Image (cartoon, rainbow over all chains, first blue to last red; front, side, top):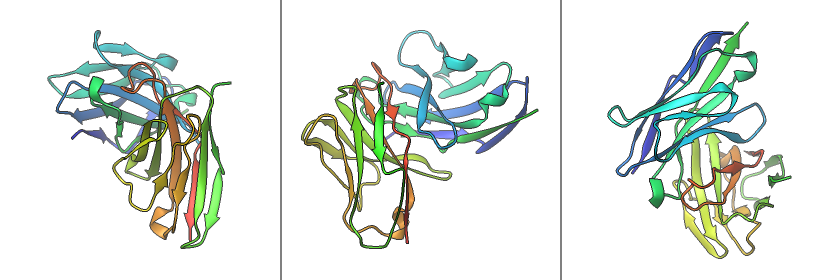
Length: 114
Length: 115
């Protein structure tokens, strides 16, 4: 079985400050890891994904995440928050090449203060 | 434009009245899935389909049915809705069965209220 834990259901950051969203996972096989973003009244959009290879993954809108196997983590960061980053963010895991099911974390809502 | 289309966007119904939420994708994707989103629980998978006539249960299938008679369509059926099925529902599709070749593409959601 696989699971995802996102620390903090709400995060508040100032515009221009670092955004750090934490995600820890459990998986019995090498996982594929994803971050999705959900803007109000919309579906989820893929920010970035890790499948194999380089453990630092760059995504859209200046976000990046690092896969740390020893820590079973896949934290999402952005050096400088923008007002448009206000949204809900979801970390997700699948069972690698054997997987056709995505398990989501509970989500972290980001508020950006001017 | 490549997209996943769900209808309706909003639906209010009463307990026990059968309903169907439609989902259609125009990307020729093999894989389709339904999720429900509830506060603090993230998205939980209801059913998924690997191809036409191939469907399987996700984590929370009770009270739901699906069918995949055509590649592009994957309707979600609630035969006898109950208030605990009040939720935000998302349909999603993917080219790759292992979710690596292509990420999930989501519809804009259907907000269902069962009274």
